[in-house]
Image (cartoon, rainbow, N blue to C red; front, side, top):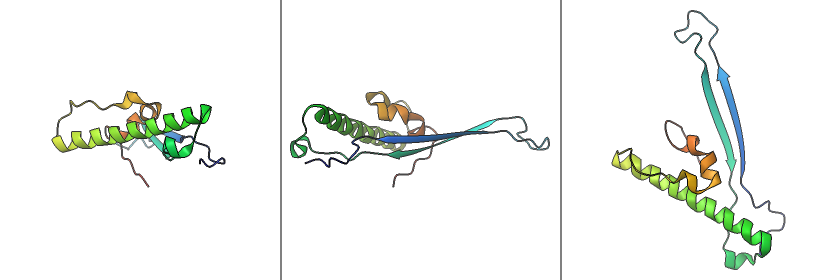
Length: 115
């Protein structure tokens, strides 16, 4: 059965910053640089049969499992794209709200660390 104390949700905290050099001698004087860091706490996946969820809890559990599945698909698609060296493969970011929110943190020139 599910832990009644569990929040059954993902949490994302995003910090953005902007910095502009104020030294007129700096090569990038006047150019604003932007940064973003996201801290993500993912809910654990649960087997629907074992969780004995009903109603709202069943819907929550299904949505969590779907978003984790899509996150796995996105990471796999990015890895395959990097291995093949092509840039034209489809990455399914839009298949879940979680991956839509993390799109710029997962692909492109972003760096991601999973613990």
